[in-house]
Image (cartoon, rainbow, N blue to C red; front, side):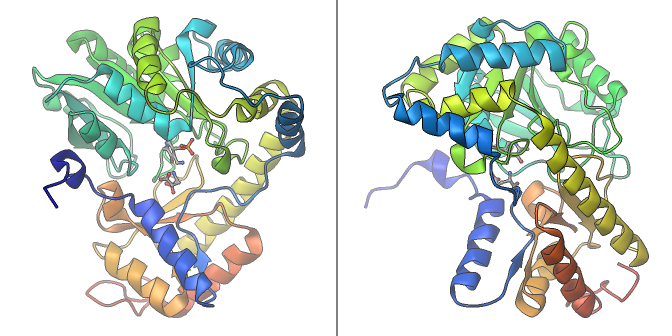
Length: 390
Ligand code: PMP
Ligand code: GLU
């Protein structure tokens, strides 16, 4: 066979999906694996959302839709952005996408030129860099403060004549950190000084524990410089629906629409009606799930405090990011092999030495996973995983 695409050969596969697949395969072989790997709510999609989708299907919403998405969904997103995220937004600035991931990929394709640089703040979610690379750009990594996981002005040192964009993710996957106003203002200042765009991935915005989520586009002058990405997977337990959206200046949305037209055309028509119900319906379900995640988070933080492990802030999302003292892959492999608990090594997030536990897993399983982890706690190969001093 002749050589395949160098660009695609140059990207890594998704470690979050790979680890989850591995755990699934072990389960299929009859091994009792508890997966704390993938970030997927264990809850079922709330009923009123399913009913809205079924109703749409039954009344014949089975045809092609406008390429940016059905007007009802664009309107619902614009209304939500105005009232909840507090920055100006009209339906013309919205595109519905097949998941937030797809919105990120299309945003990169819509704005980047070959060789453009995109600043990615580490630890960073697995798909940002590949999305940049697939769009012909280059990711420039910059570490957040390793204790607070906030931004400081050293990020300015990464700017070159080729810098085009900075990616912000708050609440963060994998650390759970929520960026404070100061960090967001630093991003805003950079964008203003160097004419950069920001991509703000706010998919975990509803999952915060005692912290305030601030939208980057709500910071002064940022609405015209920000591509805000969000979706339904986390807040409404709709991972399999593949529905998300982006809000951006109209010129960016027009570019993204072209990319969408030649890719998936638009998200699935009846699925978008589920999205309308999610955004315009009763929000009690979101708060109920948030509270359950918070209880699990508190439980895990307590457990790891007792075990004297260092855990990143965990102020949002549903991940506990734990310092494994430089042995992330060994620890993850060991826990999977010996305790049958799947977690994701930090190297996947450009943060080697840490492991990510997803607590989007029911409490009984989480308790069992903790019991198993405790049983192998001092046994990992290598140097540091001594009992009580990880
Ligand atoms: N951004 C972050 C930070 C995520 O963790 C995920 C994981 N699902 C996504 C985007 C993509 O979400 P979606 O299911 O909407 O594609
Ligand atoms: N975002 C989730 C995670 O990090 C789901 C998998 C993925 O899309 O990466 O586990």
